[in-house]
Image 1 (cartoon, rainbow, N blue to C red):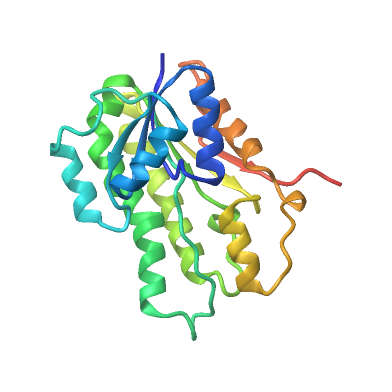
Image 2: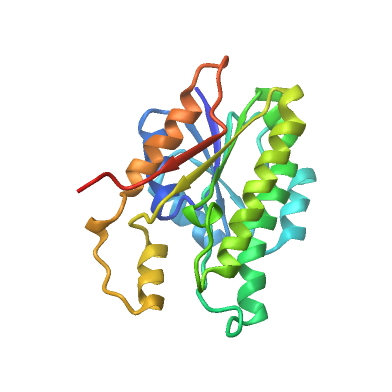
Length: 230
């Protein structure tokens, strides 16, 4: 049985992935920002373990390394949580910039560091659910794209550093996906939202599952998921 630690399992891609892994009987450890949220996740995924930590609190995440709350072996650590606030550089406030950098970039870095002993023990996989915005930046996406470009750089450096310990790293770059975040983006863009027009979360989750389930003699460093022609 494989063991997975997932952030963002409460909705979107993280939820779809957690459900696929839960349905096949894998062991889930789910990060929750509060005890109330942890209770919700435990109800949604019977048998799952929860770890309470706020992704916006880097110091709190760092303390997990010595807390005894993390498993001693992790086959996959999946960073699926994220936040977005659109706005031009001229208009976006410092708080909105900081929030995106803290949750989308700093949190994966700090949490991965806390989990490295368990990942090394299992020769595990780190998956960063990035974004098309981590490959190309568009107007009003500066802070979000900066956080995702940073996550891409972190993944590349981590891959080079941890290869000798057997730790693999995969970055996944989905185009627009039908998630609550995408609904929020449409509202900020002043556009109507139709979930059927976008990649479904389960499709991205299946891509991540492919990376998780690859035999030990192979790894995928980068995966881009684009909409199929209509």
